Length: 319
Image (cartoon, rainbow, N blue to C red; front, side):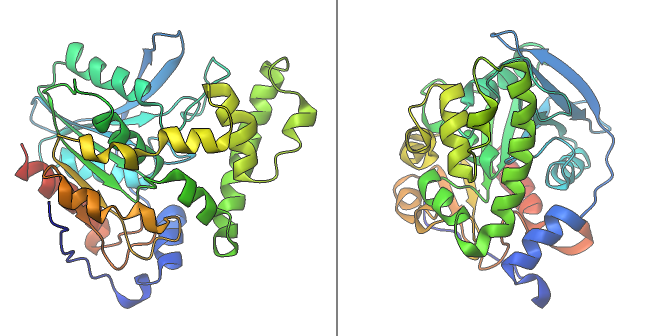
């Protein structure tokens, strides 16, 4: 599918990628009522799902996945949920393992390629909630998970009608390198601080799996992925994790109508994260590359973001 020409034109002060990213992450607020449901996974762990509903009962649902160290209450989640609820589509914001305010039960948690947890949520919404039309939308890490899920299997449920991936680091090795550059130091250090603080809790619960001495050697995000993410989830090291979980390699297999929105001024993304060739060769894959937007910072009018509007448009086009 040819690359889509973007119409996104923010106000001049939000054309700066750093400003749009920081504003969206730290300043934006969205008030939206949610109801929490806890589901048990096949390995005995749990996921917390935050539901919100349209006024008219229907069979349409959007499943929303957050980014690294996010949760179901982040404005980029509730903003989309609110817009879809206003347009007669229910929404469920998935909190990945350990991200709902309570540590999960296992030593493992979540990562960019943990599609088995997304699969469990989809099955739950089909079998227990009886939704007949399901749409997927992910931001950053959650977006990579969705693309990997759609491209790694032949048996995507027929109920899954379309997907939207926003600010997606589909080439994890490149994005990891980008996050370790000087221009991204503030982001890198903030992510690392949150991840290490949560890992300290796990270390106390599972001292036989991770010593305090080893934990204290974590100085970078790659260290974290080598020492914890890889070991806890069955990978050899950080590079093995990045290689096997990058969704870029799966894009050619996607048959579900899918929209990728990656801003050209997103400092988290490497050149490989703009899959022009893959989009041109796959009629189900639509790629939009706005000049602006930073990382998940597509600020627009009335506190409804451009990517949220585009998601609703894309869903309506591919019902």
